[in-house]
Amino acid sequence: MSGVPGANPLRDPQDRRLPRIAGPSGLVIFGVTGDLSRKKLMPAVYDLANRGLLPPGFSLIGFARREWQDEDFAQEVHDAVKQHARTPFREEVWQQLIQGMRFVQGNFDDDEAFEQLKTTIQELDKAQGTGGNFAFYLSVPPKFFPKVVQQLKKHGLADQKEGSWRRAVIEKPFGHDLKSAQELNQIVHDVFPPNEVFRIDHYLGKETVQNILALRFANTMFEPIWNRSYVDHVQITMAEDIGIGGRAGYYDGIGAARDVIQNHLLQLLALTAMEEPGSFHPKALVAEKLKVLTAVELPDDLGKHTVRAQYVHAWQGGEEVPGYLEEDGIDPKSKTDTYAAIKLTINNRRWAGVPFYLRTGKRLGRRVTEIAVVFKRAPYLPFESGATEELGGNALVIRVQPDEGVTVRFGSKVPGTSMEVRDVTMDFAYGESFTESSPEAYERLILDVLLGDANLFPRHQEVELSWNILDPIEEYWDKHGKPAQYPAGTWGPAEADEMLARDGRSWRRP
Ligand code: BG6
Image 1 (spheres, rainbow, N blue to C red):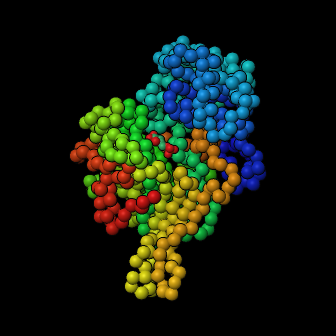
Image 2 (image 1 turned 90 degrees about the vertical axis):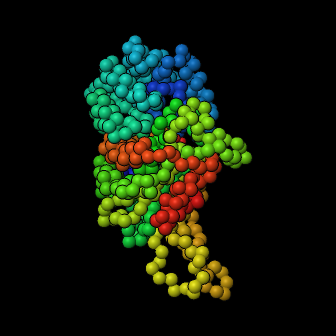
Image 3 (image 1 turned 30 degrees about the vertical axis):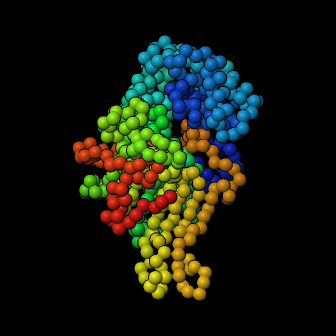
């Protein structure tokens, strides 16, 4: 059963014992000289090979403008693997992998280069036994997506032949608003059938994100309280301590909300809030996520219930860091958000009236992603006045990263002769409960692409619904005022604290 798309590992005990190994196949990476490719994709390919999850003849083709020979490309992959791979370097694994490595030089308009790519694939089919099965990974700026898929079509590289497959893997951002996402979907679906299109949202590849489904649906104790009767509100936080680094060209004009709320945070919301699917078959899972995204409602007053901001120059962790507007390559008049916080509600029986607060930012206090389900206070506290002053609300916190695990916060009696109650926590940490380390998100996602397992990839309707949620906010921000400010290294602007204070709540300090 292993590797069958839709096979449910939680239901089939056989499946857990069998490793999911990719069949004969190869991967073509466009944009192979970019950061993502060097830091994530190439190391993930090596880690998969090292874990024995790739077929012996697996092939990797790099496509870029650089004047490289196959050897130069192989050297680049070698360096990337040595620097960023998760598993130890093993010469015999490397020697096998290098057999199937090729480089094709050209730009995306270059018909000759695409013909060369075609020939290279045919050669690898013969030499490496890749069986015509190739995935094309578009790790390129979004403006090139249409051109590359059209070239693949023009040169017959996307033709689905009997007994083999051709797949497109598309990095985010998938469009920059609803309209552009719809246009892009049309272009891609004109070339690849929908079940051969894999849109990457690397958060879905993270173990802790998949664990949301296990926590909710493999247990009995959480689901009965997972609703408006018990939950006061939900906070989803994705904080980063880094700035924009060398990504000015990509980031300016995009901003925090488009960069991560539209995709990662709304996916986290969907998994946290959705109903239980009948199985983990992609269709069943997507159907439930779509229902939640359709039920999301924005607040009437976007001025009061959303905040965007930019970091300003400050000392962070002993280092003096520039403000966003002083970063290299950023327009000093830019209004791009490096911090965004929004309040949403979900119109259904389970969640009516429960606010979901989403926030993200660069240059915040520390790197942390978590989902905090905060419960209502006990309706009556039979304690003396003052005894529960230090009692917060109960909370269940899914720690997505970096300290992966789950925390439950509840009140407990302070030792002593009086009845004083204070918050304590109970912890599950991945590192303590499991001996194996978690695979990188990209390892899981690349393997799933090669297996044709679409479960961890957003379908086009999800992408479009997410833009539908974000578009009115972006339009509002466009028309109204300027971003607020926060010093680098802090937890965001005062306006975001005020946004929650107005609702009688406050942000967690993760
Ligand atoms: C990417 C965003 O999708 O996620 C980046 O484009 C962000 O801006 C990154 O830094 C964070 O990923 P992770 O896995 O480190 O949380």
